[in-house]
Structures are given as structure tokens and as C-alpha cells.
Length: 464
Image (tube, rainbow, N blue to C red; front, side, top):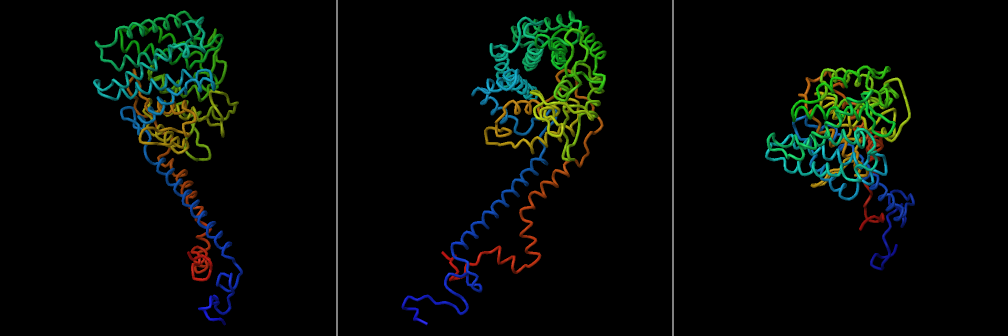
């Protein structure tokens, strides 16, 4: 054995240079370093998975709604994101995706601003009023009217006129009686009169949105705006609304007893079974037209369309229970028959019907599945890739009746323990990456420790 002072390494008996010092297994320093890196990467991945599961559990448990009188958490930041997106051309991008994209994105932003303004004292509504007016002007712009025909009755069709009139009434609702802008009052009265005349002259309760095409949901919005007129201004449209209700009840979808998705534009007879995307909107507005009729329709809607796919939280079907059908631009993809858009809009329908448990459950699922990304200034869902989805969610979480009082809560449609399956899945997901190490430790605690903690004894090639 050479003297250590002559530069020759000391080798313990039974070990050779280049081994791991644990019996000559032949593990080189490079291989052992790679094993340490791989171990640390697995550890990091396990930590990340567990943190994501914990964050999902928090999002599921923390309330995402605040009822018809409170301000939903994060809603101001969400609207700030939407305004930025609109200024950056999100309306034009949405228009390229579906026919009413530009219109819907602006009208929902404006309506959400009105909803928040209604929650504020009369002297603190300037921001809501300014933003709602801005959105309303965009609806009247050439881009806002582009998809619609001026040859229809009323001009540009019931879709454009009905939603615009509802937002226009919302702008007036933010102003105190006696101090409303006179020009805005005249425009609201004139547009309401044109809508009322169109309904009175029609053989069908459902006016055309496009030439030769009628969707009952569009006429429901328009009739709700006439009821709003009679709340803000002198009564004028009571007979029109009563006639519309009578004729609509005579033309319900025979399969479901609800408003059909599409109707014959001349006779008003059902042309397509009731569907979740339109029903979720109809239930939002019908309560302001006839609360008693709306209560029965809402109860039937819940019975036929509310589901819990795989037992993991509530969702809304596009087609009634026991029936499947194709997806389209309105419904989007239909995994397990569920319409994501209808599920989001039903948050608002539930809230205006006093169904706080269902509204909160649907909103909680959206917080988990929507992958919200927040900053101190903005909040967006799905990484902000689809702003119109953010707009529908903001409008739904701020829902409240504008004409009728909030109804008494209906019987609960989801159990109090609806979160348990989802929370169990999240706990399992967070624990799963740690399961192999736990099993090794249970089988052989000493060996598990040696594999978990790298050997850093002198001579094994891992010391600094």
C-alpha cells in the first residue's frame, strides 16, 4: 500500500475505486448523479401534483357566488380582463367563431356592469353606467348590426332588438327616476313600442332573429324587456305580454313541456326539442315575465336536464334525460351529453330563482374545471383563450331579477354533500405520486430510507 502523501488514494478493504462504497456494485459517479437528479425530479413532480390537488380543493370549497345582493369574489378583476380583451379586438375574434360573437361579448359585458351597478348605492354607479353605455353603443355600431337583417320586423330582428332593449333598460335602471337621460328614455320607449307592435301583429309568439328562422329564447328576452319597460315607465305592454304568454303555452315542446329550441317562424309550432343552451337562458328571463309560470318551467328544466356525470358534481345536459343529439356552435362539445355553456348559464338561472345551492355548486365546479388565472388586476378562465366564456360566467354569477322579486328557494336539487366525490378524487390525485415511496417504506423501512436519501459519504463520487 502506497503512502497517502505520495498522492495515491486510500481504498477501503472490499471496495474499489469507482464503486459506490457499498459492496462494489459498480455504480459510477455519473450514473449515481443521474439517479439523484431523477429522484429529485420525481419529488418535484409529486409536490406539484399535490399542490394542484390542494388548490383544486380550495377552489371547490371557497364560495364562488354571493347571491343576488352580494358581489361575487373576483368579479371586478374578471370584468377588467374582459374590457382589456374587448379593447384588443376580442369581439372580432369571437365573431369569427359564431354568428353573434361580437354582439354577445359586448352585451354580456354591459349587462354584468349593470348587475354590479344595481348592487351599489345610487351615488356610486358612475363606472357601471359609463361602461354599460359604452357596450350599448357598440351594439348599435355597424359591427354590432352586421350579422342581422334590417328587413326584418322589427329591424335587425328580435335577437338584436331584444337584447339591446334589455341592456338599454338596464342603463335606465342605474339612473334615479326623475334624473334619467331624456334621450335614453325616448329611445327605450320607441324601441319597446316597435317590439310590442311586432308581437301584436305576428301570428306566432316567436319573432324572427334571421330571415325564416325563429328561436323562442330570443323572443323571451324581448318580452322581458317589455316587462322592464312597464316597471321603469308608465304601463303599456300588459296585454301584449299576456297574449304572448298564452300563445307560448299553447306551443310548448310536447316531449318536455318546455319552450322548444327552434320554432316555425310563421305558426310558432315547435321545430326542435327543448335544449339546454336555450333553456338556461329562458329560465333566466322567464322569472321577470311571469314568476308563477317560470317556477314550474324551472322545476321541469331541472328534472330533465340536471345531471352529475360520473357522480362528480352537477352539470347541465344539452338534450333531455334519455335523449342524445348532435353538438353545434351553440352547445359546443358535449362530453357525456353535458353542455359546458348551458352549465355556466344555469348558474344565473338558478340564482334568479333563489336556488342558491345549485348556483353555488355549478359555480364551484366552474372554478375547478375552468382553470382560473388571477393577478392583482385581472382574472381569466381557461387562460383567457375564450373571452366569451368569461363573459357568460361573469353575467351568470351577477344574476338577479330586474322586474320580479327573488322567489322563495325551491326544493334542493343537489345534495349538501355534492363536493365529497370531487374532493375525494382530488385527495387521491394528490396522494398518488407518494404511494410508491410509502409502499417501499412499509415493506423495508431501512432500504426505503437508503433509496430516499442519496449516499454522500466520502469516496462515493457525490460529495461537492
